[in-house]
Image (cartoon, rainbow over the protein chains, first blue to last red):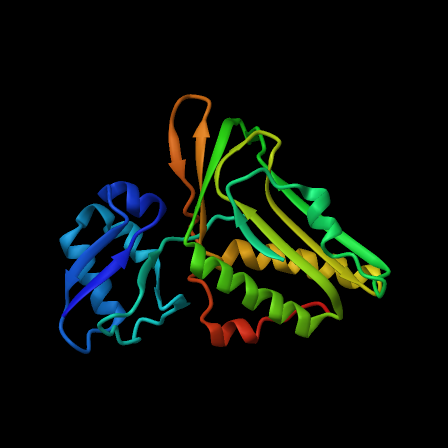
Length: 81
Length: 153
């Protein structure tokens, strides 16, 4: 299934895009998804390791299942304030 | 009031937004762009956010703060885009019956926002370099962990 992943800050700039499309197997969990993004975009791998993932605007765990149509984002360490 | 804005933050308006006859204390925190970090000079900051999630996360933090302290009114405003030296990037205002609670609640809200809310800043250094600030930190808490964070109260 195809999923879209929103990118922000350094991740967005490294790839010159605010959104990636990725083909992942049904039942894929966040940990696997991060590994697949890392493999496809090695320039981001260090940042991905330090990033969280949100599913539908809530922080997900490594074992959270990614579903088609989910609003998915890679959340690098934040620095607001 | 919870607001993400690309306009200058009117801090007196933020403070006014927490006015209440039931409050005996109001605290306003304003975070501004600092010129020096150690010996490195900043010329400006730029903020970016995942707005829909940021607003939801801030609302969750406000809800938790309201359960920990006896808050009358609470406002959180964060600016995005370029923020020049001395200008406000964030304003948090809290009003409570007594001062201890508004100091504690405002400090807690700012601390948690800096850990959990998807907003990022980019440094524009005086030497011409730029840098997204992605601190080395522990992964942010899951919503379950968040509920167990101890507050002052």
